[in-house]
Image (cartoon, rainbow, N blue to C red; front, side, top):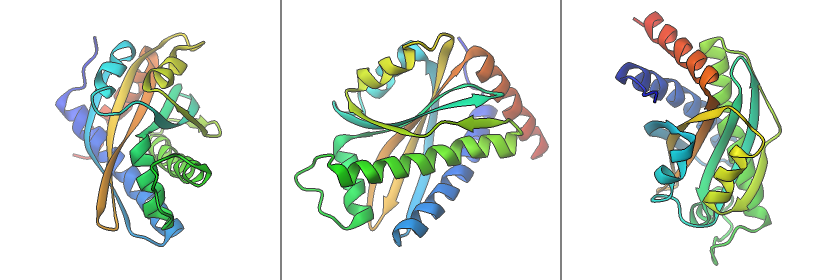
Length: 205
């Protein structure tokens, strides 16, 4: 089983913080509120271990924004929020009350837009800094169980083997909440990505 080296993990955190900085700037401009986004932690696991990592931290019933991407690296990217976090995010970004905590049409719109901005920033940063060509599909929002989300990765997508799990800390208007960005890659794609990360890290020193 592949493991991230300390240098690879540090480089990925640095790259993703650049991506999250861009996403936060876009969200701040869009909403008129200062939004901060941080990458406190990144983990890599095999796809069949993904639910074991996420189940303890994501409650049943999640809002996920899903994009398929292709190019030099191929895979699936998700932003995952539990229902409570999705409703709070909507309240913080729109000033509309989140009680009762439910994912209404307004929350769906907000979560889809946040997911679109965040995933595009991550995949775009990989593309720009790592010189890896990436194109991606229109984002798709789904509301289902965590197992349902993970199951959708496996359906009809042979060769997807590894998942990068990125903890995303949102801070705005004195509140904080955590979401997760999950990038699922084949063995070949993870190898290409990590080689590019190694090269980028070398060029920084």
